Every structure is written in structure tokens, then in C-alpha cells.
Amino acid sequence: MSTFQAPKGTYDLLPPDSARFLAVREAIAAPLKRSGYGYIETPGFENVELFARGVGESTDIVTKEMYAFTTKGNDKLALRPEGTASVLRAALEANLHKAGNLPVKLWYSGSYYRYERPQKGRYRHFSQVGAEAIGAEDPALDAELIILANDAYRSLGLRNFRILLNSLGDKECRPVYRDALQDFLRGLDLDEDTLRRAEINPLRVLDDKRDAVQKQLAGAPLLRDYLCDACKAYHEEVRELLTAEGVAYEDDARLVRGLDYYTRTTFEFVHDGLGSQSAVGGGGRYDGLSEMIGGPSLPSVGWALGVDRTVLALEAEGVTLELPSTTSVFAVPLGEEARRVLFTKVTELRRAGIATDFSFGAKGLKGAMKSANRSGARFTLVAGERDLAEGVAQLKDMESGEQAPVALDSILDEVRSRLG
Image (tube, rainbow, N blue to C red):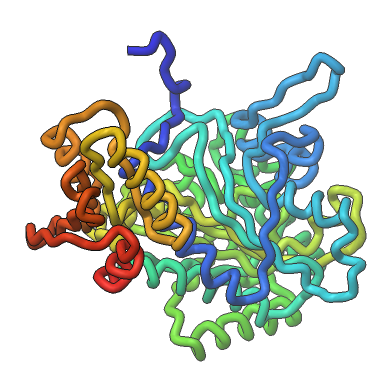
């Protein structure tokens, strides 16, 4: 056993379980690729100020959970705790918004890092797939993203998830609500840290998960009662579009996402089979984020879905993904000449797009066939000196057990035919 172990709160993805994670990522990405979203990849670390400004200095992510460090060159960097700020920074730096085709539609997949108390469904290193539509203010765009996430989950076989929906207003109506909420919070019995947070960003207090705080928030004013006419109309159109496309959602007047940049539409995907870590993904509109990080006004909307929690949700529902076999053909050579001949055939099959593996090492027939069984291959290709003398190899169907000779120059055609 190695002296080293994975850091606390992290995990290794290993075969065969890693295939499920890949399948989840691909399923989430598939509807995005069909809808004009291009792939983007950003560094695993950024200037710490990018997250302090964008995510919010009063958020737990920035004050408690962010992995921040100073480099040898005295640069202050942080491992990315979320994806939106990085994606928007990259889009602005590359001037994608000036190409004349707005919105800029991007999707990404990667690892993110937060220093949290490790528990099932909450890790210090986690994986997300996200999507951002930058530079357009349109209820149809908000609805599109919610529908794409909904369709991705349903394509995986998930059924017992819920979509929570709310509006956080805009720069016109939210300040009025902010004042009303602060007045309410000042009258509660809250600790000093929470009261300080209430003065910086009172909406963050609504997101406090502690029971003692939530009980006191029962009579808190609701943002929906303070929305201006424009925000009401915008939110109603999002709701109508979702309903028209058969996407069920629940209005949640208390839904507040944990990041400061959200405006208007906000939503969360939750799965009740996951206990306290019920959120599997979420997002919303962030019309002011570009200006917060030094860019022009670019109304935008996006989401991020947790791969780890989606896998847990599939387990909770007992959904087994139909994963393609990693190996279709397993070649077993008996003797040195057979090794050379079958190695050539293996390369030929692979180049033709057929997943093929080879019995490496000096294994006898019994050991090689055990390897073939473990590989999950549909067919085993066996050849010894007598077979080569006759110009054939033995093709064995591992499901039926039937075996028949196949001419060496016909192996590719025969395997293609049998695999369909």
C-alpha cells in the first residue's frame, strides 16, 4: 500500500465506477451541444479578487471555503470554487461578446474546490458541468437553460427531482426589499457574524441552513411582494414558457442562491433522496456580474449541475445506466508467432473503431481466458500454431460459448457482422 492517500474530503474516480461519471457528464452536455453551446475550459485557479468581487465577499464561499494562496511571485490566487466567474472572465478577455453574435453560449466541465466539512454529497473537490449564456436579457433564454438541464436529467432516467423557481428582482426593486429585510433582521436574536452579514448582504441570511435561524425567519418579508412590474412580467414569462414545454416547477419565494451575483430568475434542482445535501444543481440570471469584474454591461444566465450528486441521485432512485462495454474483442495469442499476428489484428480492429484488448504478459491459456472474462468482452480471439498454419483464428462468443474458426484476413468483417 502507498504511503500517500487522497487528501481529506476528496476522492479518486476509478474504473469501473468512473464510467458512470463519464456517462453523466456526457448526458448533461449532450442537449447543450445540440443547442449552440460551445465548450470552454478555464484554469483551475484564478486571481482571488475575481471570486471576491463576483461571488461576494460576504459569502461563506469567499470567507470560509475558498482555497486561497500567495505564489512565490506574490500573486494572490485561489482554486476555483465555482465556474461562472471564470467563464465570464475568459469570455471578456477573449472579447467573445464583440464577435456580434449574442448571446455567447458556452458549456464547461471540470473540478472545483471548497474547504468544507466532508460528508456524503459534499466534498472539498467536486465535479460540475455548467452552461452560461452571456450577453442577452430574454426570458426564453432562462427557460431554455432550465429545460436543457431538465431534459439532461430525464435522459439519464432521473424522475424524482424537483425544480424550485424564484425571482430575486433587479437593481430597481431589490434595494427596497433589502431595506425591508434588514429592518426585519435587526429585530431578531442573531449572532454577531450573522448580523454583520445582514448589513452587507441580507439575502445571504435567508440562505442560512441553521434551524435556529430558519425558525426566526418564518415571518421575513418575501421578495416577490417587492418586485417591480418589469421583474414580475419577466418572471411570469419564464414560468409560462416552462409550463408550455411541460416542465414542472415549484414556486419557492424563499429560494436564495448562495452567490451575490444573481438577479431576477433563480432556480435549483433538488432531489429528496439525498438527505441534507438535496441540491443537485442550480443557477440563475446574473445581469450585473460583468460590471462587477470590470467588464461592460452583459446580462447573462447560467447553471451548474453537480456530477457527484447526480450520481448519488441515480443511486437513490435505483437507476442503472446502460454503459457500453469497454472491450468488444479480447485477443489471446498462444506462442510468439501468434503474438505478432494477433497484435496486428488487434491494431486493425481498433483502427476500425472496435474496442479491442490484448493478453499482455506471459500468460497461459487459462490465465488469458480469465482476463478475457474480466474484460467483459463479447468475443475472444484465440490463435495458436496450428490455427496459424491453417490461416485462421478461433472466434469465441463469450455469451453463448460457441466457437468457430475465422480466416485471418476476414476477422474484421466477421467481427463487424456479429457486433451489428
